[in-house]
Image (tube, rainbow, N blue to C red; front, side, top):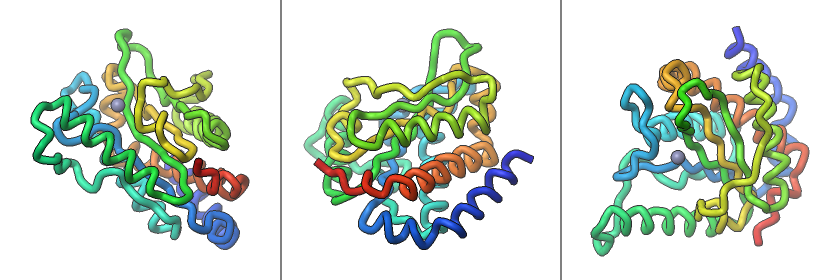
Length: 229
Ligand SMILES: [Zn+2]
């Protein structure tokens, strides 16, 4: 079973890497961003599941695995709901205030890597599979390429997708002072992938791959953890 082999691999990696990672990643924080949330549901799957809920499920599993491995971790939102400032009256103002407060939290970390979790959608319902993006900070492309190839190998063996730069209009990753990687875990516009993304098993499998790839990255590139600008 694929999930079991990923889990076994991660546990082995943890055993072998734990001590060096602690030293290498000293002060470095994994900043997990469950995309959207609160009034912003993001994309909606063909069966009506909002993207924000899936992002939350996957990011919180990543956080739990990071805790389990002793890796420093923070989240850009603590809950499915978001406390908006009172002065933000319109949905647009609330979304802008939320992005601003996430960015402040990201950039308040001394050293870190931002991992933003999202779900994709496309007009053609046949399109499926994970897609990873990166910002132009040191190390982000390496991590994104590693995650993309692990996700392809484990979850989408037919996929020839390669990691690509993050579109400029995404404020959080553009303005992040840390390397940032945005993972679109799958396509909500594809009925079978949307159904899979809702299952706890698949969410755990995605989280294991993301945390396993992150662990490999910080072990091999400890210098990327202290590249805040
Ligand atoms: Zn999104």
